[in-house]
Amino acid sequence: MAEYWIEYKAHNNYSETVLEAVFEFLITPCVNEYQTLIFNSCSNSLAETLFSYQNMYGYNISKIGTVKRFNDFYFSMQSKVEVKSRLFLPSNLLSTEQEQMIINSTEFYIDHHLFLQPTPLTKLNQDSLQDVPMIHKHESVFEFSNRLSDFLYNELSFELNVTSVTSNAQDVWDLKRGVCQDFTHLFIAICRLNNIPTRYVSGYLNQGKSFVGSSLMHAWAEFYIPENGWYGIDVTNNLLVDDNYIRVASGADYTDCSPLKGVLRTNGINTTIYTVEVTQV
Image (cartoon, rainbow, N blue to C red; front, side):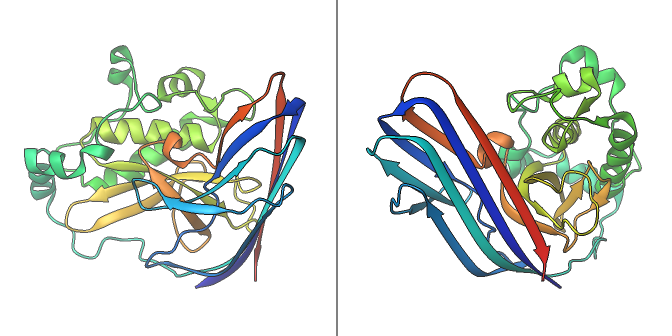
């Protein structure tokens, strides 16, 4: 079990005055069987009231609306969260034949279709499919997912500023470079090609362990093992998820987990700078 203090700070600057705005934040650690939110507080430079609502996956989104005029907008969040350890290995694995029968069934697809269908960010072109790993006949979902993580970890290079939030799995496969979001999208795309339900997870990473990608919000994937449930894997560091990972939200891809969305009435350009500090208590 581990306990963390998290500080998220964002500064948005606009070259021309904003006349009206709505902001949505998805940055607060969630509550589940592995996490307990002990403390949470948010503030903003406009002194506007924060409203909350749940998205389709059940995660709380904080929303701010304003008609005040501004050129700079500051937002901060402080959280204290407790994260429990979890088992790395599935406890009651089925045979590979049983797994394959389940994941290839119509009932299984219907139950998990949200995390089996390609999305705009998790699509691969037909001519790339011959080069990506596919599950072997006698290989379990758990074994394949770890083999795929090994493959991508060795195939890709972590590099900033070569992709954007709109880059998809095919872009990353062609570049062989990117950041945690990109590695996660490519992992998801390949798992779904193999009929393995896989979802995108956003959150924070313990900054005291020198993990790659811990300086900002982090992304990893979760794959589903029949009769066992969801298991997290971080392709960027080639690690199974443990209590060094603080979960915020999950969804089909980054679009469902974007930390900040806004609708504004203004012209000109804007810049956004945010920082994350994660301290193990």
